[in-house]
Image (tube, rainbow, N blue to C red):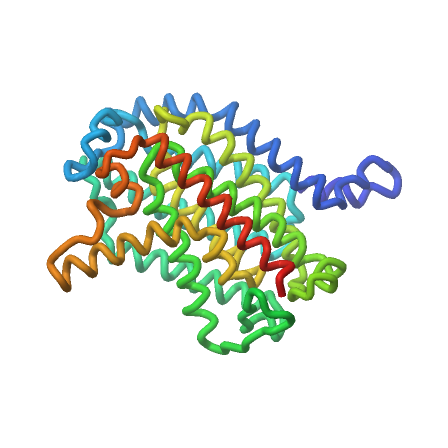
Length: 361
């Protein structure tokens, strides 16, 4: 909004010229989202605690140590959604249609997660929204967003798949673009959701991935960098770095309240929305495969659940003591802070590997 309102006045008021710089607006989005989180976080947490008499339901078959978390309110993702949405509206170029796609996906998946959290609280159970309804809603939203993106991007980017470590190769996957990209969005959303099981575990890898894609979006949207690095130029994607910056700032603010012992859990409200946001950003920047590397921790958590379920149904035995993977280590006696910090280290390493694909082509 500031860009659209103030930058046109830069010819007469020179200081407004600063709004043309993505780096300035991204940095401003980080600080704005952080400030919003700090200002509105405490009253929102008090409101959630007052409305949630017993807090988030704790699984009876989960790790015994989680019993101590009983009474902690959930739906803390509203803090993240508020901070990200307001910061993006203030600092991004709202004439860019990709920004609107991103906001619709983020808020839409946040609404699905909010409904799921509300059903869990209402039923006093870890089972929330009917799984078929939940998947159907995610599918409709993801497919609609992908169609929207294909209409915005020009050929061959609209149906192209870029490969990491390979120069200037764009595979035309035609109609398969829609189911593939929708799978990326839904898979990313639910993988982040599965990772959100310990205090602070998910939010830091989310911030790391968002910071990586802020850089990727900035590079892919700039012809100077794309020519030098020999990656595909996707017009308009540079503006996505503002949203990514807002997500980093909101994540930092939320971590203040989610650090052990957590004052609030993000719930599906936060995990589904942030995961979907990362997924659609990867689709728009043509870095879907790189997301699987940068967000490799989320992939590992999701795969551990798939392997556990498949092994039990096919062989009648479990591979892990408990799934997702972080619960396996809890059952093995590893302290929660140790698991969280080691997973953060893994997330940083995978992010560095993912960023290296920009140069190693």
